[in-house]
Amino acid sequence: MKYKYLDDVAIADIAFRAEGKNLNELFETAALATEDTMIDTKTIKHTLVKEIEVEEEDIEHLLFKFLSELVYLKDAELLFFSKFEVNINGNKLKAKLFGDKLNDDMIFKNDIKAITMHMLKVEKKEKYYATIVLDI
Amino acid sequence: MIKIDNVPREIKKVSDVVWEIPKTYKREMKVPARIYATKKLLSEMDKGVFDQLTNVACLPGIQKHAYCMPDGHWGYGFPIGGVAAFDPEKGVISPGGIGFDINCGMRLVTTNLTYRDVEPKLKPLVNLLFEKVPTGVGAKGFLRINENQFKEIMVHGAKWCVENGYGWKEDIKRIEEYGCIKGADPSKVSEKAIKRGLKQMGTLGSGNHYLEVQMVTADNIFRPEIARKFGIIRPDQIVVMVHCGSRGFGHQVATDYLVVFNKVMKEIKLDVKDRELACAPFKSKEGQNYYKAMACAANAAFVNRQIILHRIRECFSQIFKKEPEDMDMNMVYDVAHNIAKVEEHKIDGSKKELVVHRKGSTRSFGPGHPELTKLYRDVGQPVILGGSMETGSYLLVGTESAMNETFGSTAHGSGRTMSRTKAKHIVRGDELQRDMEKRGIYVKAASMSGLAEEAGLAYKNISDVVQTLEKADISRSVVAFKPIGNIKG
Image (cartoon, rainbow over all chains, first blue to last red; front, side, top):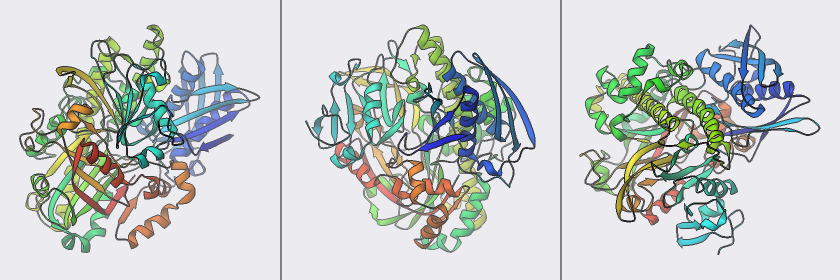
């Protein structure tokens, strides 16, 4: 699971670059980076599993919608996750999210307002890479 | 031509505080781009500002110039501090020109208490505010409403609060658009947006949102007559400032329509430089649907800040054992700084309706404007500039020049100059909290890393921003406030 927060991009917000050896792993890493921006993921226990399905017309929009779903679940159901099993098939994604409902043991960092589409690109080099800017 | 690293070589000086990037800078530019800044602020602006602002200048139907205010910095799509007005017939509406936090804004409340009254009780006051105005992630407001009531909020805005006992009748006059943007249609917002926002009315959020107890000092009253008009009557007077927006509800509305607009653009073959500049013709079905949904979110934001004001009045009442009315806890004004609105402005001498986008920019209507409440019509609109939690904030007033130059727009804060990630490398939240307390500023925060990200060193000098606004005469400073207590998400 490799991701790095970027120092000099969109300075009022938070940006990260994630990588993965395949698309599934890239999405899992990006999901972890997103959650870790909100809550110290080491403080999230796995007491429940949420299954979600997302469909979009291209891989960038699929990533946008998948991560936006995590932001939605944060507000609507107060759910946070620290382990992900993503299965992408063409333009469709199925994911299992492992986490817990918000509780006092969790260390809070930042509330994410939204996933942005700024600079959003999934690149394939020796691995898969994506840069995501989060609106804080 | 001037030579400053980061600044495009083609930039021309219009005046000491206005700079212009000509239309020739990018082939698709429809209008030049103008930046309001002193030479110092211009040199400190990041490269992204110039690129993003000139991208905005490429959008269909844009009028006169794409503007960036002196607190401007790199955002997504539009820069923060961006202003752009579009022809409603030929032009577009863009969620990226408003921001995800629809109607993020500022609210300022006076008291007749002085520093001497408040200082001994500052800690219990800030602790109580922190308890009663929920902050951070997962925060739930005390307001229990069902979906139908939430839809009433979307349509009626701040009036709903007054009708339901969460405010004074007088408050409504002191809110931009009287607390209700017309045209809101709840059928244009998703079920998801409602689910995200339903329990969040009366919550602050996180990031740069705050509630601050501030004080006036004698040397910080610059225009005493106007200050008096706004309710700032003496040195050492205590005021309360709030910065927050439409919470998850508005964020989801923007997220939903970003996807819709990306699809529209593909259909109508409109190519923009950044997906965050996604837009749709204002008069198209999608454009109108977004405007109606945006109005819902904007009205919810007015309600959110109104509920917070209600809580502030309760907290002061509990601590100081007086009725809020007896403490003159009047609202000065509430301004929206992430919004698109249909406004009338002069273009080449004749009046025209325009869709004005302000993203990190405040309306700055001058004296005599018919949209202004009679209370302030002779002096101009109060403009609230939120500074960093360490340095302070400003109250200014709108001008006639702003009407002529920037579609009645000005800055919204001091503007960041350092990324959150970088600030965290330099500052530790707990150390900053202790250090600020030594300097007489008591802070309560839901997140220590979030606090570090908001350190004063991550922001521009707000005096430089105000100096630019004064020199360009797009607003005039009235009072500056010093922070003494702060709650943060």
